[in-house]
Length: 119
Image (cartoon, rainbow, N blue to C red; front, side, top):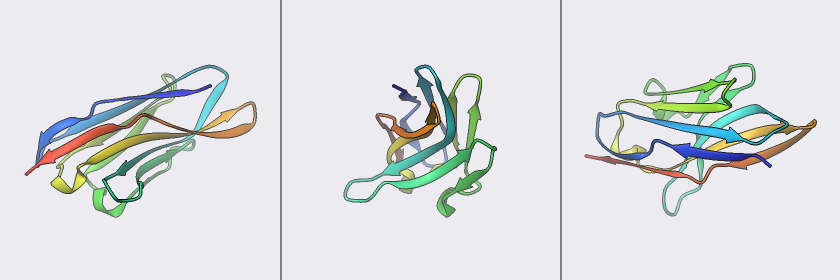
């Protein structure tokens, strides 16, 4: 079993920055793809950023140039550096991992962390 634990959410003023982190714990696994999603009430969860095992990254258009996803392979950790935050970035952010466990792929989600950007 793999567990994802997030940290780093909170309240920040528009224009400010936050750094989200997500650590995977367990044994006998490797991370194929990390992702950060976000969700607001009444809306579907949307992909914000993703990083593959090869280091390729993708971002939703609304955060390009402001957010950066990075990973620490040795620590099984992913980060989302969020700069120039806007009120529209307010959401619950979820960490996602596509995990290889003995050649079988599984999806895991973090518990979610609230990010609130005040205007």
